[in-house]
Length: 332
Image (cartoon, rainbow, N blue to C red; front, side, top):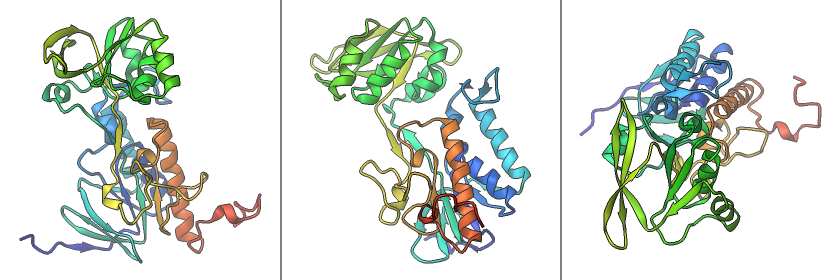
């Protein structure tokens, strides 16, 4: 039986998540003298920590390693007073104030909360896939497509995201092969037609990836593909694997309290705010965004959440800024 955990009431604001959204929120909150606690979760730094080179984040003309970028963001937040703890949120109580956040180590109380828990790319589930993440296995075409110029690559998936990724990757790759486990693609007709009309894209249906062959030093050399009708396994030469079978927002712990859409993403009250259905709770990053899913857009919404949170704490706890007359929003 677990011993009683310490209850901590030192932090007015808690940020859940330490990716670009959470770190940016922490920077802004810290500069507003709110000294937030950032609960990092099981993957400190978020999805960028499994990305090698990041070449599309502004300010780094020569690119930067994903883990290094997140380390710099964390250092910047800590410089202004943010506190980071590698604890995983197990449950939350958001009905009434103060809010209660229970982690694997402590119980925290806070007046305001920013949820920047991110989303996780769905994986095939192979040990070899996990071992080669960032070394030929990718979950983001716009992030990593540039590194596969003139290479032959595989995209796994059959939905709109897979067709979009495959089409985008033809800007760089010499050939893109879409592998899907069913006879028919799940993508919308317009997305299917666009992909099928691209001469660089080929399709292997009724098939799954059984194993990824390669090394961290030399990258991917081939995949073992299993035909689900014949059960035959063949070697398929390729230099990259993009998995596009969807994302899962890390929001399960908030279900029943925060309003979620049918896919589990947190619903915001207004397009120009990060406020959720609960007063004092704000959300940002990939836990909200299923469209762009970029580090720079996540950072932008982290900034918005921090500004919304600060305003809520210091201006009579009003989040309905959009109800003010046009031009009145900034008149304090």
